[in-house]
Image 1 (tube, rainbow, N blue to C red):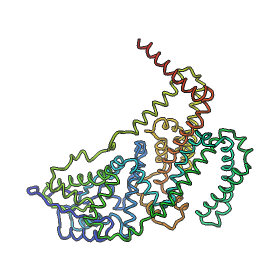
Image 2 (cartoon, rainbow, N blue to C red):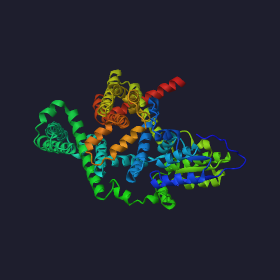
Image 3 (tube, rainbow, N blue to C red):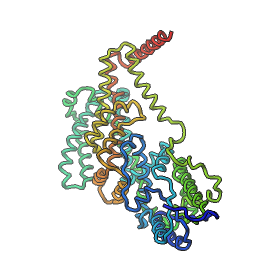
Image 4 (spheres, rainbow, N blue to C red):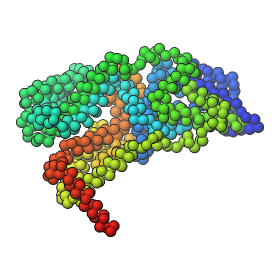
Length: 559
């Protein structure tokens, strides 16, 4: 937005103004400095996309093809978390986030001063930030968003349910050793059937007279109590369970044990964390925060160091690299001979001024742009390759051992079906269109073979072709999360009405469904097929025989 018209006979000057993006005092300081300095250029910590957004323009929609690159949704999560924190601060101090930057732009335009957008593209920054986060840091980041929706008890319950889904198949695999015989699992399955039926009826009856959250809690409580007494205790559903077969009894019973145990432990842990003060909304901390501290150098330094402790790699992408990128832009402006007032967040001021004082220390500009694959060894890619090779090898070795084609075809069909049903079912539960649901179900078998692919990407791709999603949705989500009086069920329902949130949930639920199906197949379905060829030991012998036959074939071919 600037035009280099000044003479380059002398080197210009750069004054860096550090602001708090949610501070009215910072807005006044920016206006006063620009009025007093009357520079040739006002440089602001904005990129083209964020500048247009602050101007009220509609951001660009996500391109469907970008989703297939795999990290688009996760990058939106990271951006949402950063935006949510800033929005909460802005709400606390009653000022629109980014008001300092817009004050700089508007003051410069009123005075006829050029404006330069000197920040790196936000999409590049968020991609590199997400790539640099470790697994634990990513979990904590997403957990931070979860605490915006609910407290530690809600997060503990969700984490416990997820852990229970994993523990369920393990219970099914080692059930007899744990005392969970088929008869016990059958009683538990009966209890589940009764609990579901009674719970649905109870919810229908009380939904009109109770608060939505209270109605759900009452229905769950009545359903569980009735299931424990009528199904587990008295065996009222034993006949129904027997008609469904031993496979259903074993699968549903062990999953119920895992989910119930996980939910109980998660809820207890969340309750303890809540009593200890973890996972709250931190309103008291915000109220105690002095607005002047937001631009105080010492306070900002402490905050930056805390963030580096949280994620050194993320801090490099979000802070250090942007310091260098902005400094490159300011050095270029200075070399044209123009005087510059640079308005940046207080956390960037020290780093930028250091580079301006010693520009020879700047890293190459090309190292600050483009995508980043992250730090360290690509363990996920290696695991993906191993899983893919193992899946193909399993079928090839059985075929080489002389196992009938009909058996292998039925085994593959079971793999295809269970992955498709779970992936498509959870995608539809999250609100996916039927076309997107179908695509997710059809590709689930293939994406389960390779963790580097995910059915959710393909489901999301089809969904995006029909439903536009862009950065503006994050503002709508932040507005919803700011209403702390709204019942959780209604809040979640309204969040699903925001295209971005629905897209994230569709992608996540499709992937979760496929992962659950893979575990269930390995624990419940595969052993059933294995009985046809001598059980697990028989499968092992056949694979060894297949490997021997393959080696002999290769030897004969080469020799």
